[in-house]
Length: 505
Image 1: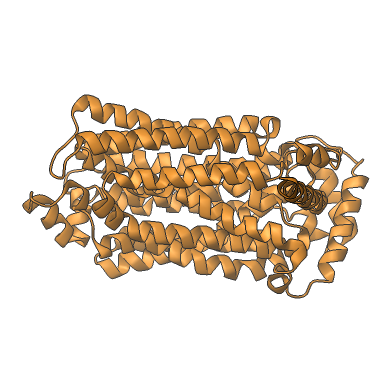
Image 2 (image 1 turned 90 degrees about the vertical axis):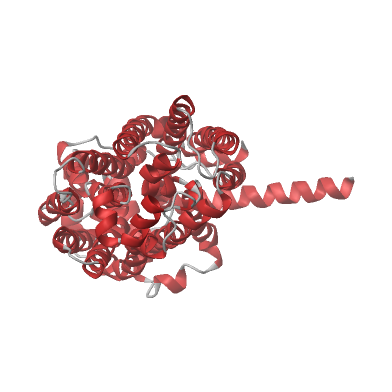
């Protein structure tokens, strides 16, 4: 494509190698993804466990157990139950905007550290909760901490990583997210077997483990050269040399200096980001998280055990199935990490979109044909649905999962980067909040049509990527603005060509 050829001409190679110092720093920062994934996975499993539901949502428990006339799709349709899940995202939405001025003024490190501390408080409160209010407050604290971490960690990884390996380093955050979900599924599966039905307390309290790793590790995290250069150019240059493992870093350092000179001219990044020159990036900051949520993955992540129970799996079987999907997601995210800087962002998104569409259409079709309002799928159909869900999760884990985080974190110039990332994270939390708040009602009313709803959106987003998203692999983050200028010029030229063709016709 013309766009890709123009983009490739702007790629500039910097010197350096992958150092142990860089890897260790990014591993510590990326552990913030474990916390987010763990919190999402834990809530999903707990909502399928009878002791937890009976204690905090007795009306749902009584409805599921005592009223067999209620539709299979509607047995967990409860505002209080969805509030437990969605509170995490509403709190994260607010926190992501609070994180922007912190990141801009003090760098990513303070946001990461503060996020870890707040999550520790939320984990402690959730573990000792004895009523729904304590449980919800604990979720709010978890959401605030996750919002702070999600705003700052992807930025940190993108600023630290060498441009030609930036995709792999940033996908590390999504890999940790998938690892967190798998850890939560394993924890839920183990604790639900504890006699007395109090295992859910261990599941909630164990969120403190990854939070402790992040908090302690953040104390020793180095600031990125982008942040240090605002304080002392000599220290920033030394840090860049240490990160890259070479003293020959002058081209990259010059671009950093240039980007920071522009940064000084911008006093209000949220006002600046709405200017026409940044409009393509702003559109992506809104559209990418919107599409990422409308893949339907948050439904799988937040309600997988419930979905498996809906189609007839028992409590333990539903949790085991969630573990299987967690393993698939983790494996495919690792594959994405290995190939994202070779195949490129666009190609992987298109491949993943096709795979997700086919899987969702087949799942919806099987449930529409074989699952009645009070029925269950046969064992064979249930296993086939599980395989299809794994195929869907594999497509997401390869594409929209990691790249939905990577692309927004790398497309903004330094002067609006913190604002752009805050908007991206806030939109992700907002759309996820809406979906998690409405999904159980949607499942109740749309039934199997829910999967056709999400598959339709997958078609839309795949076409959007093909038409409007430029390839950014290997492009230095400090020179990304030139790529967008080239992209916009190519788009304008294409539009003029189409108009001219219509006139001729």
